[in-house]
Length: 446
Ligand SMILES: [Mg+2]
Image (cartoon, rainbow, N blue to C red; front, side):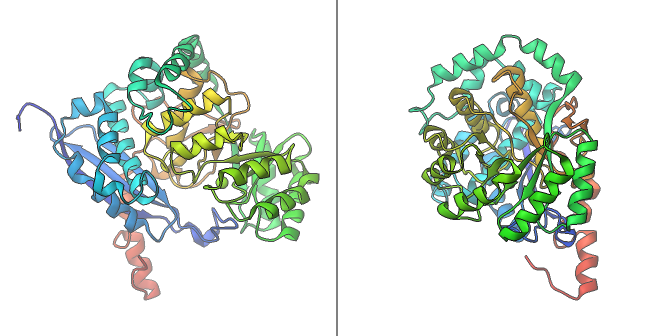
C-alpha cells in the first residue's frame, strides 16, 4: 500500500434508534409504533479530514440486522484509494451489487441492497465534501456522459438506453445555470405529512393542519386504511379545516388488496383526495395499474418501498402510477436513483420523493434539486415530502420556509449526524437507551 495514496481506512457502523413510538409520530395503518432508526455508516480515510456519512432508515427492531448487512460490505470498501473511489462511485456500486455470494440475498432488494445504498451514499457524501459542493450541485455540474457511466442499465435497457439517458441529460443542461440561481433563491416545493399520522387525535390533526396552511404548505397528507369510519371522519375534518384549495393526499401504507383499495378510495372521493399512496403491495405492478384505472380521477402514487430500478421500470411501463416516490435509502444509493430519475423523466411521470423518518428529508432534497436543475427542469406537479422530526440531530438539517425546502449549500449529502446524537441514541448502550432500559428493568429488545 503506497504511503502517499489516501485510502479508506475504516467503515464504522452504528445502530441508532429514536424513541418516536412514544408520541405516535410516524404512525400509520401498517406501522403503528415506529421507532425511527438509522443503520449509520461512516467512512474514514487514512488522511483523516473529510468523512463519508450514509445510512439506511428503518423503524426499530431489525436495525441491528441492517447494520450487520453494512458490516458484511466492509472488505469491499477498506483500502480503496479515495480519489479513485470519489471519481467513480459507480465502480464500488457495481462491485457491491455484483458480489455473487451477497447477491444471493437479493438480488438487488431488501436488507442487503439497502446496506449497499448506505455505503454508496456515504461515498457520494465524501465525494461532494471533497469537491466543496452540496451533492445536488455536484450532480448538476457533472458531465452528462459521466453521469451515464454511473448507471447500471442492466435489466432496464428495454425502457431506457444509455443513449436516451445521455440525450435527456444533455437537454437537462439547457438553462441549468438559470434554474440553479432560481433554486438558491426560492428553494423547492414541499408538502407535509405532519398533521396526518394515524395515532394523532382529531384535535391534533386540526391544529397541525391549520399550522401547515399558515406555514405556507399547499398540500398535506393523511394516513388512512385502518378503519373506514375513522378515515371518513378524519378526511372530512381535514377538508373542513383547510378548505377546498389545499391538496389532501391520502396514504394507506400497503394496507389493502386491489378491490378493497378501489372501494375504500372511492368512499373517500367526496373529500377530493389528490392521490392515494401505497394502496397495496409495492411489488404488485398490475395491481397498481388496476387501482389506477379503478379510482380515476384520483391519482396513484408509490415508491418508498419499491426495491429497485427494475420494479420502477415496470410501474412506468404498465402506466400504473401518476407520481413516482423514490426514497434515498431504499435502493442502491445515488447511482440507482439516477436511473430511477431518468426513467421517470423518459416516461414523463413527476417524482415526489418519500421523506420524513430520520434523515430522509436531508438526503432526498439533493436528488429532487438535481432533477430540477439538470434533468426534468421542472417543479411542476412535484413536491418533496416533509415531516418535522429529528432534524436537530443533523449538522446540516433540512430547512423549510414558506412551504418550500431551502436549498442546501454546505458541501456533502447533508447526511452527517451530530456526534452527540450518535452517543445518546446508539442502541442499546447510548446514554438514552442505557438509562431507559435500566429504568424500565428490561433487557435490550434488539
Ligand atoms: Mg407513505
